[in-house]
Amino acid sequence: MIRPSKPYKMKNKVKVSDIMTRDIHTLSLDDNLYDARTKFDKYKVRHLPVVEGNKLLGILSLTDILRMSFGDKFGSSQYEADEAIFEMLTIDQVMKHNPKTVTSENTIADAAEILAHEEFHALPVVDGEILVGIVTTTDVIRFLLEN
Image 1 (cartoon, rainbow, N blue to C red):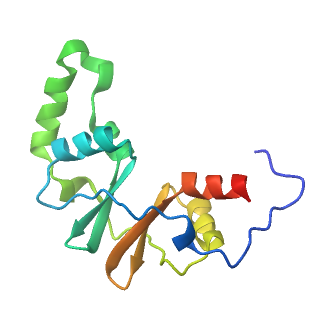
Image 2: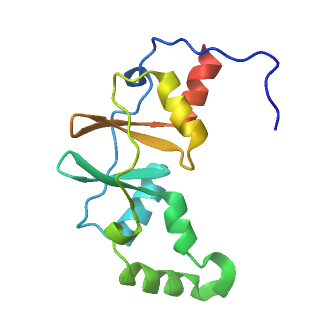
């Protein structure tokens, strides 16, 4: 692993609210995996929070969907195999329940610490029980590059 010669000290006061995405595309438990795949493709996102109203229930990642896909394993019948799986499973069965979250008042350093030590790349931003945004590893990297 390559480590910087000097540890980078992030500005401790900058909040997640300064870099989070506020216009969030979401799923509900009434959606299906076809809806999820369509949203991933249409909006070019890799994570979709699952909500009931504005309350966060879980998160689904593009990786979760790709893990279930047969890809090129079956050639032209790939989509038929994927459709069978998508019909058997629900959003609730595939999503990550109770994901780690941050608040809009947490610092970017707080979010970066969680992202660096966990096996996911997005954190829903929740104030109280309300989903207000999402912050990703890409958001944190962009912040570091600009500052």
